[in-house]
Structures are given as structure tokens and as C-alpha cells.
Length: 141
Image 1 (tube, rainbow, N blue to C red):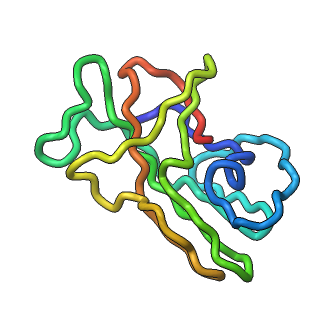
Image 2: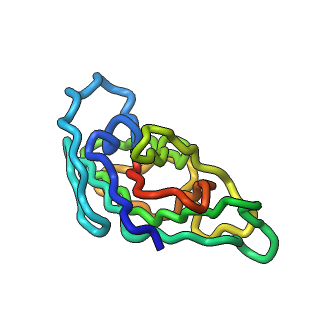
């Protein structure tokens, strides 16, 4: 299990979704704990849980010196219009500023796929990252 996994408030708009309209003002970055919903301009994001795994499904291995980090999240669209989202709009960032991109892993359960989220709806899914097994605290951005 990760010692610390949180997400940055700035990720809510900049990395989690795009509405295709005018660019909203940049929010002030902040870090919140797992399970806490954060809202910005009527869009909310909650990191429900995070865990490390060596194997996904029956055969997908992280490889020597690596682990998979599974982030289960929920995105709520409380606007009056649809928004677009994708797992590839998220990254993990460690305390040295190095970022890790999400990946599609065969055997992954409930992947967060790219789609549009209608107004007043929500979607949940997992985003998977491969990181060094000795990685310390990270944030979701």
C-alpha cells in the first residue's frame, strides 16, 4: 500500500477533463487525502483508493524493480454540459518532480477509459501506473 497518495487540486481541471469551452482560471494547487472529494467549477474528483500490485490479471507483471500503482477514482460532472475525460490525462508525480504516465494493462479491472461524461453524471474507474518499487510519496496530477 502506498504510504501517501493524494491528488493535486490543480489536476481537477488541467489534467482530469476538458470542456472544450473557454479556459477556466487556474486554481490554487492543494493536496487532499484519499477519499476526500474536491470540487472546482462544478467538477469533482475523488481518489477512492490506491494500492500497489506486482501482477495484474493472470499474466501482466510489473517487471524487475517495478510495481503497478492502481488508483481508483470517481469523476463527477455537476455542470450543465458534457465533459471529456481519459486516463491518459492523469500522471503520478513523485517528491523529486519525476512524472509517471498511466498505461493500459491486460487483465485490468474497471479501467477508466476515454469518453464523454454527460452533465450531472459521474464515472468511476481505475488508472494504472508502473513505478519503481522503492518509490516514496506521490501525488496524482
